[in-house]
Structure formats: C-alpha cells, structure tokens
Length: 310
Image (cartoon, rainbow, N blue to C red; front, side):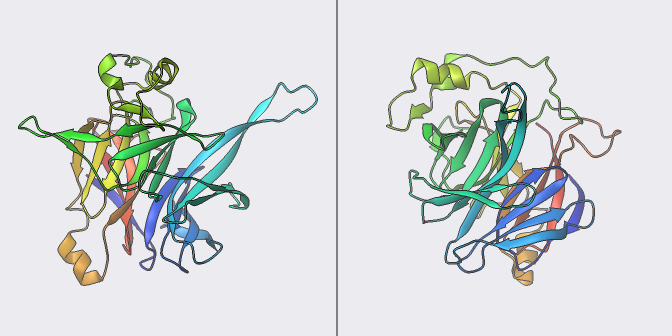
C-alpha cells in the first residue's frame, strides 16, 4: 500500500537509506559520483546537506544510523549519553567510514572483509549492539558495533512450496525493523523472546564453525516480531528475514510501485533503498496497523512511503 511519495534526485544512484531525528540520509554510488545526502521528508525530500565521498574514486554503498554510549560526566563517570553516528560501506575497496550526526563530519575510517570481499548493505540492531551486513552472497555478516569485528554469519534461505530449501543470494540494502513497535517507538511487551533450538540452526561464527553457547545466548534476544528487511538485487521485492534462523518468512511484491516498463522509459534502474519512517502507520484509522518504510531505487525520481503488514 502506497501512502505517499516525495521527490528524490533522479541523478542519484541510491545505495542505501537510513532515518534519524526526522531526517532521511541517503548514500549514493558510482566512482567519482558517490555522496551522502540529508533530506527532509516533511518538505518534499528537500536536500538539506550533500557531501562527496572522499577519496572520490571510492564507490559508496550501504549506510546506517547508529549510536554509541559516551560518558557525559568525566568526573563521576555516571551519566551516559547517546552519540549518534552514520556508518558507510564501499563496494570493492573493503574500507568503511564513520561520521557524526547530524553534521556528517568524518570520525574514522576502518577496514573490513566479507564472504565476497564486497560491501553492499548494512543495518543497526539497537538492542543487540550489532550490525547486519550484506555482500551479495546468501550470508549476512554480524559485526560488533564497538569493535566492527565480525561475530558470526547467518545464512539466508527460503523454503519453496515443494519443501525445497534455497539459498537466497544477492541480498542488498538492509533494514532492521520491529513490527511490534508503537507510534512513539516503544515496544509491545506482550511479545516474547524466542529461544528454540531451531532458531540457531543457521548461525555460524566468522571461522565457519557453529556458534558457541555464549553467541547463541546473545541471539536469543530477538522476538518473533523482529525482522531484517532486504531487497534483492534486480528483483522488485523486499524479503523479511528472521535475524536468527535466516529464514525468509515473508516476501513483499513491490513491482506495482514503479513498474519496470515505466522505469525503462524514464531511464531509471532497480529498487535499492529501505528505511523506517519513524511512524508505525501514517493514519490512526488505518485498520491492521503495519510498519511504514521509505523505499527508492537507483536513478528513481521518487521515494515511496509504503505500509508493510508483518
């Protein structure tokens, strides 16, 4: 269901979206053309800030808002505050960047590796203090937020109607969501944490071995309403992934939002970009609730605000 749409920059090769403090941040790609944008979704996605990726030969990829805790009172060490940041991947150079928010000033550069050696998408899982990272393979890498070190990998699979289990490859832009969240961002505590052994079957550590008991306990903190949304490269779908088992539990068909025939006429490319909106649903009288997200794509003239039903 499309609630509304806002103008985007048609020349942007969108690689990732993320939301923070009522603003949408967009990361774009291509060598010598990669930028970070800050947009205002309350004002037709007006661009408030734009800055190039440096050095310019790098190909920008996925981005995500996140935060770290900092001690505000150095004397007592008792009061902690959130320091908001943005993390950005690059495609083949195995280098990433961390920026402060909202001013997008560079804090640090870091290196990383993945299954394919590439960076595609990234999303922040707040309650676990982890990033989930895609690289075009069927695996999601799970990084510790503080150290940016890989902790484990989750293999993403889909069970067809004939009971054949398929690996899901070309996972691209990612967004962690919780369908139990209310309009004010709090959770519906009637949901419970899942701890069944089935949830751990796809979990392996960075060395390719099964997760340890401590690592398994760590992933038990996900509830049944928590999902990783992912778009698949050159497919007009979003898949909803269980963050612990890696199983695709729902597929959203987005082919009617911006039909491929129209995209070809407009010179636009594939779907690529997902972000929460900060609202559970747009209208109080909408039956069935749902979760609102922004979606866009490479060279798309619009961002679309849609409602997903869990």
